[in-house]
Image 1: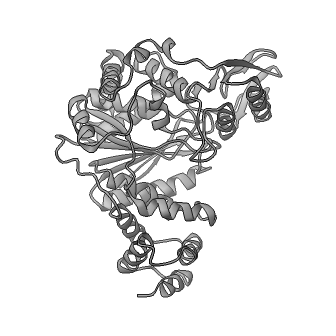
Image 2: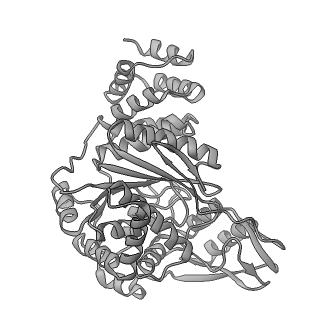
Image 3: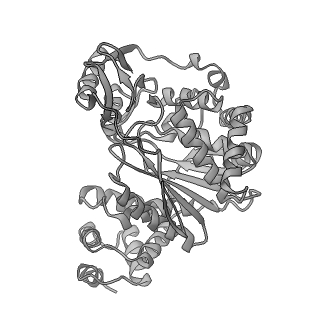
Length: 440
């Protein structure tokens, strides 16, 4: 078998066989074929796409390219959740304890943030002492005891995805739906859970900019999951406005804790109830309405917050800062951003909010960049809110006033205040299952 022939076949619009996909993924991992040939294949895939069968085969080859996790020693149904990335998205910190408080296990591997989107691992590491790098036996032990554990991805989990993504990044082929789907689902399948909930975000703060693109990606990922025996559901969620009020690592942990105490922002609370309900539904806890009621109950009675504290303690974190958020490190500088006009916030570029937070020090431009856990933004106003000239829109937290002023200039250019309110948009735009698409 020759790589030349595989490239030519896909270039001409053909479908690659399972054997051909296995050949190039294994050969690339073993450095038996050069980058330039794989790059040529990625470009051909970008322009000609892949069938569902091809994408499933690519996903499974990638999933099996390194370590896989066997969760069978943990009793019960294990549910995983993946978000395609957003701004202010701290839902994993909230929904995992909700689900665990109701007896459904969450053994989750998460990633770090890059660019304008935040990473769950960075948020957890803002808790003093919290360990995200732990061995597999301890990981399993924590899940068995607490019902949940969130750790960083292992170095050899889906190595083929790491190599392929690095090449996609420099060949302008990242925005290929089959390649995105196989990248995401290979990691979820290798992580070993029985069920997968996908949170596919669309809008100005997301990679997918509109609902049609989001549904196309979600439908393909649901097909992949179901075809390999994983119960899979995707929710298409709005990212044309930041989720909640906090953007930045320790700020988001504080907001997550408040939400787990039943004191969180309404939009974030409602989103988490719906995500948790769908995770519970996948685990056959009950019908969707029963799952929503149960999720509300463990938020209101404090048992979800207790689960979060239990996980933090077992992973070495300082529980006292979770119980008293004032103990978190405070940024050296705080700076208020004031409204320039009277009116209603009609729109806000969510990606720019994420970039502003990164400028303040809360994110990283490259994988090697360091982050300031205390930096970020607390929004006092969001899309649809009335404002008066001189009224506080946001508070910035950073290590220097210069960073605050740079971020303020960027944010002001991308907040649009008008006389009319924007058209209401539901937080959850659609639900995708193996039976089809339901739009809201």
